[in-house]
Image (cartoon, rainbow over all chains, first blue to last red; front, side, top):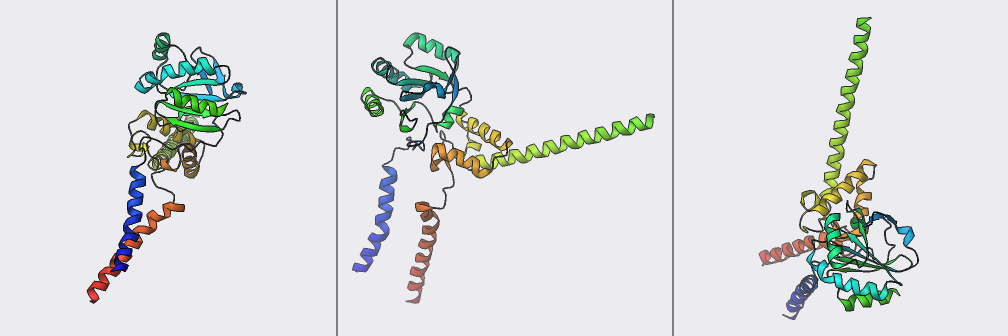
Length: 169
Length: 125
């Protein structure tokens, strides 16, 4: 009898563990394969039409936000980046890479809501794919050695953004 | 002279047709390879489908990258590694048979054997 019970526990317990582990995960959170690795380099055009090369961004830690004007959560976190830029602008480079969007839409957005970061266009989505982006908003925190320290999927609130920036400084 | 030029023209024409046919075959073959690789990659937007079957823009962008990489001669493994290095093993529709993933291959067989043993034991009694 005891053997049967132990056998049953031996079979059922791992299954329950796997179910609890799997169901406890956020299905929308894509794991980042880049954390701890060198951030991919890129050369993209800014909103002002200038070419911005990765090599030119040396010296400061970098926060890269992949966003779009059609993205609701991006609207919500926009003021958070505006505040962060005012507070940490001299110490951190803030980049906003536009994801699957049109320049005209971005210009209208910036005119209305302001420009919290250096806006860059990634028309074929290659940089987004290089960073393993699955949707927007996604934010990457990169240290001075150009290592991806953290990837945040979804809206950033002021507290979380502040925390990640402090870790870079 | 006319016959001579006709021969030259005929040969050039044949070569051109042959070249076009070879190009078409190579492109078909490359597109088949592209599709085969794309069927092994999960769409990050429409999670349950491969990028070859996903209508999302991201999937189409990923297909373009596969085509570019195939065109320069990168192998299936190199292309899959490229995406895995960026998205993680999650992006592969077929997990690699290593580490804990081995359980996906071993456990069903073990359960089958255990089940058969239980049935045999009961039948004997």
